[in-house]
Length: 505
Image (cartoon, rainbow, N blue to C red):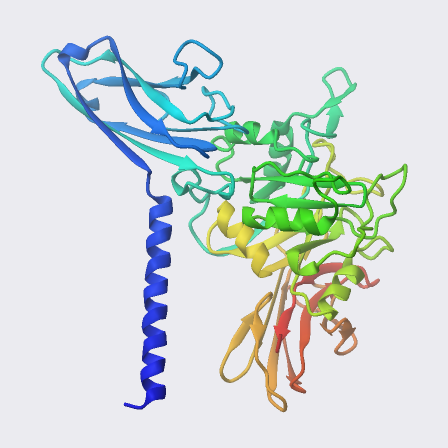
């Protein structure tokens, strides 16, 4: 065995160990921190009992899953939670769900209905058990699994709290920019006046449009997370993703997938510039997207344009909102800004958002932003918060600017040895020919084109069928390029905007 071969085997062994450690770490992350067990007999009928547990420093979320035996004999156990102060003091009684819920969570931002959100103090907490019925000759056993969350945890943990809405891979359609009563969203009241618009109406409007997911992105707050926690079980076909629009004097950006507090005061002593802000949020495992980057800033739209000083390190940015409401094909389009970053070598995902501020807006017209127009369409392994956010991060995304229910744009690049989807990288050495494949559905009457480094590979060609695939051969010069697909209307307005395949990045 040669020294080189031996070294390769050592590296592979270390890789296997590392992957095993990662799998163990993930299992430990998903596993409960504590498991509490107890038994009941007939003597416990119509009594109360507590199960004490210690909450460590740095805990920002408590999640409890509770189960018990004896239901077939009509045993019933009700459930509540006491903080360190018991029934006295500010941090005392934190909620009661009775027998209605087997799983609950509390944090400073949100809580399962029946429980109170608020800060979580380290110390002794207690599960409060009420036993309204257990027969004299019955016995029962109960198990409580307890998870402790921390500030930097993404919003989809623990996994038991956020199961997939759909457990299958596919294209999922959503709206990534929406406002409610928790910031400046408003809508007509029953009397026809304007009032802050309840989050329920925004979710209902998205469900009516047939969307698979939405992100609520109120300005600089996650106060909406509590309402979302209440609504998610009801909207069991619509994934609700917590977000926020980080709103500053020099630009706006959406942050998805975290409810952790963020100091947004760019220009202050604590947050002198956008680079500081972006570095501060990097550990939160969310996705940050620059919003409407070429909007004018001023009294009409304060801070809406992207004007940070000093220039932002774009390697800290994961996405750009290239379509905001009805701006595709207009001077306000964010596509040129995005393509400029791609030409500089950054791999940044293009997304869209309605920027809806009124859940009752249904019709697209100049200056309006109906829910779901545009739709950001993400290819994800499941319809879950984790997989949608990771699909955006990976660039497995296209934008349907009209927010239809069925248009699809698929784009791949392949060589004899490898294949890449939108957002992926592909090595194509000099002189090697790659096959570029574009598929568009339900876009008949439009025109398809491929774009290389911001320039059309050829003139737009018409789509004459409802489901159409085109293959183009492209020979590499061995240099770095990005290639993406697009479908435009007959008058040149973008209809479907694909993310690139990155060649030799």
